[in-house]
Image (cartoon, rainbow, N blue to C red; front, side, top):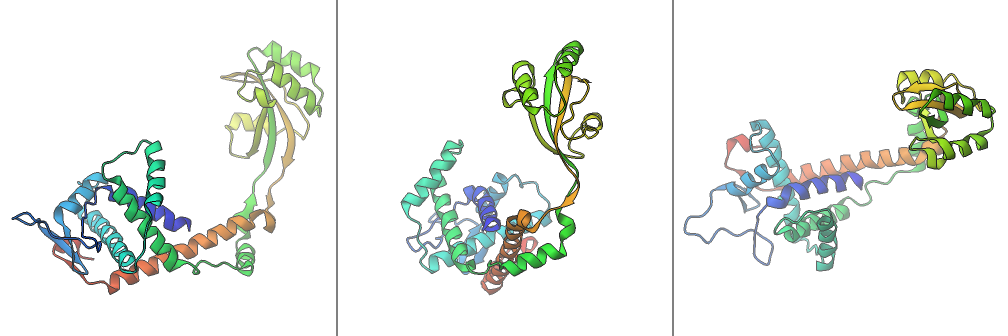
Length: 301
């Protein structure tokens, strides 16, 4: 469920400043200060304070955003809070060990925000809840994949490709001398010479530049490389890095990829599409059925 995971990761990052606190039942409680914080909205009776949303905007870098952007961000923020409510209501549990494992990954990446454990807990809680609610809605059958391939064959055309090897030296005389010692088609000798004498970063691999599609390389390189025949070695070619000898190992003309080559890719695309549809419907239904009171007209959705 890559789409869901990507959404949830974004929500986790943006929610680090969400300072919602509550009792053991997981619902938010009002401040015990004599002067309660201003309430921006209520979601099924749970308050969202102005200070909470302001901190969320500051952390996400949207403090100076337009009114329309703030409205969209508030909807996202409120939706996440609604998902959390539903997860707690249905008794979803996240174990401490799960939180510790996840926090450890972020700590290794240098993220050590205070109170991060609580937000990771909520993130995993929401992830579990959505995974359970949406499971079974992303099934893709083989016939669907075949039908998609048949109706989108133009998306799976591969342009001309070349598998190229390179030998790079400083002087033209060196390149010419080496070219004179090599025979077209003798890839083994070319690789050995590249390992010994090439100053390119590909020297260790025998000069293997890999497979390039027409348009991947600068035009002056392609004029030389794509003019070669399989097994043919170019004359010395000068660039800012020195003098190159190129060997065309294999030429793959423009062609349509076979079904087996793209089957997994199509499957993943179809699953991702179904994830988006299912997630959008679920979130829209969640918002529609919730009791939402928003006291700032600019944030109404």
